[in-house]
Length: 378
Image 1 (cartoon, rainbow, N blue to C red):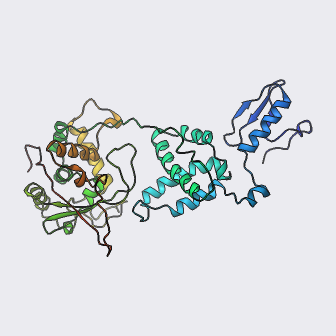
Image 2 (image 1 turned 45 degrees about the horizontal axis):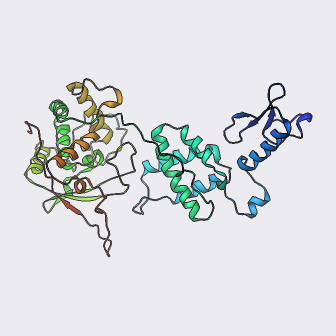
């Protein structure tokens, strides 16, 4: 609570203050910024009262009778009921990300009636964010206000009325020459992972989650884990899971044979023997001691990028990651005249996740379609 006004300022409306000399200034109740209001006290008072009616939170009896709800209350309810596009519960990463977006908005508008959120206020919130964060927050807040409109709480969607921003992608794509150099210096298990990713176009998380038990009837079954939309990656176009069964041809079978030839008993196709199997407790909880963590595969891949000097002219975030193998794989499939969409699990033209009357999952059957482009695939 602010300090009480001086006796000479008792007649001033809230948020109006004296400036230097005979000038007046208005304190924005949401942002806390001061705006000059000129030298005329009468005009400054009238303007301040109008601004307070628009911007200041209202907790009066009128708001209660009208059934007004604060942005904070509605945002909490929205998050509690938010689900994936397929109707299932959000992944933990998605929950954490969405909560960050909502918390940033609640920091400014928590007690403000939701119908008082203006386009100007929304722009101020989004403009203060990093581009990637702003894109994600705009999308989520757009959904939030769509729900508010459907409930009759607001008439317009200030989030969707803002101009959409576009992130400048810093990370470069892999070249076949560069990936070959990386593969040449990689350990056996990582080399297998690279080959599997290039043939199947699957994401990092799906590569490390593949199990031998997923292979039956001549197919490798992949229940893809898509946690959330990634505004920086045009390949990530839908939230939810895709169910893909990949026909095992001679090329894919050769890679699977190499994965099994190390004689390590592991339920996972991509696996390794950790250096400290019985040593210090691993910070990442694993299903099996041979399981490769998704962060570990990224770190080891990055080490190989540096060791191989595959991209000497790339700096910082320009360096392509393991995930970028997916883009090269899709490019190679398209170049070979094969459809990469179904193999990648994308759903623009065809749904890969459907439920029949008995709620049976419908698997999308696909072929690999290319051969590994490396001279040495042993």
